[in-house]
Image 1: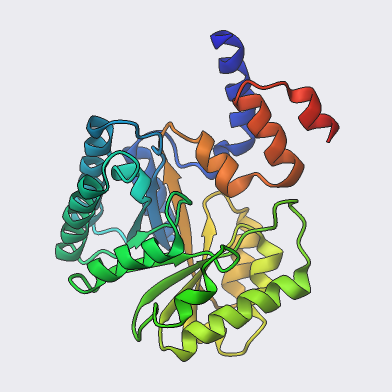
Image 2: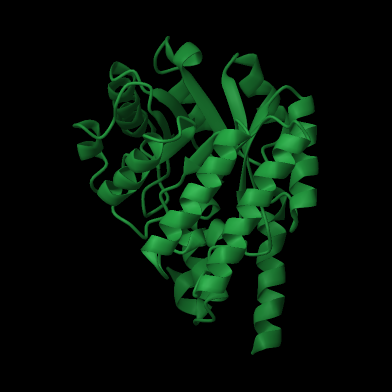
Length: 290
């Protein structure tokens, strides 16, 4: 069974490997160097979410501190992005808070922006409370919000303040299909409301066509909104985005724990169901038939 799972993982990895900057920080930092050379910024994140004990949470916290120091030492143009579940949220929220403050302090002293991603383990309200506490101490901390997530709309009523750093994460519906016009309208409305509160706004999306349409939705977006795309975009698409004269950065994940990233960020619709079935070791016939 273990051998069969290993074969399945290797097969699935063939479809996702171009979106991951290798298993180590060294490979990720080299990828960042190459992207910076093309005139683009990056956001680095570690793929290591399976935290079930204090030792693993501490390991990840140390890894982020060291990553920040490496980015600073090499003078790379990169933000850092983490998920609270990586540094102990599910094990001990108080421990997670201490880890997060340690990482935020290191990022602040290194003048590197730190993003808190929404990983689905906490409510949007708790996510904003965590961000708000850090933001009062460190002006370099930003928060990720998913407008389609329950509770996201309420964050606009008192949850966002002027000069807040907000990243809007766009993603398709559960069936993997996009109603482009209505989807663009929904995200555009959310972005407009953030901009009206004088927040600094970024947008994350893996779909090139969606990103292009969203960038063209309002004339002020090119000037006031930063756009982030996942590592692995084709050179052709990258050049097209740059031709639109957008403020573009690249989200660069690295590490060996790539399965949650595949399922949570890259796979969608039928592909997502098949990936979950195969990688969880469940019967894949039902997933493929449906």
